[in-house]
Image (cartoon, rainbow, N blue to C red; front, side, top):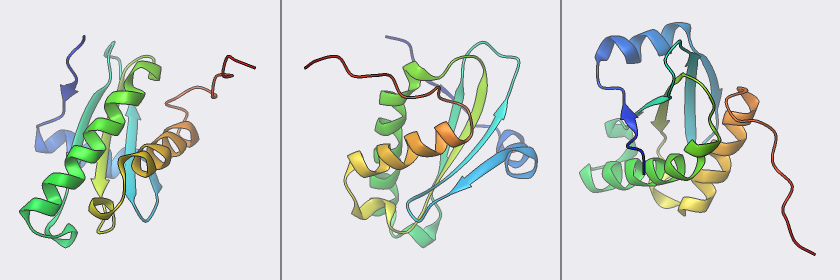
Length: 119
């Protein structure tokens, strides 16, 4: 199992906020930019508007797990920043995953959905 590479330098976040493409939803804001690295890097932010420490940590856990499930479909090098919104901590992870998947498809980070096997 590969470990997710995290963005942790402020300059990386600022670069994405200024030059990256973005998608906005009431649950999640996604910023992305193509890079020359071979693997994607991901960062998460949750401001005090999200709530107290417990709510912010829950929002970040939900985003981290949704990204973990979608990461195998991301090809090439991308820098991604996910910003938690105030409603993020109050919903189920599947909702966050659905929003994240739709945003990443809009931004051309994920390819088109694959057909499901079965009857």
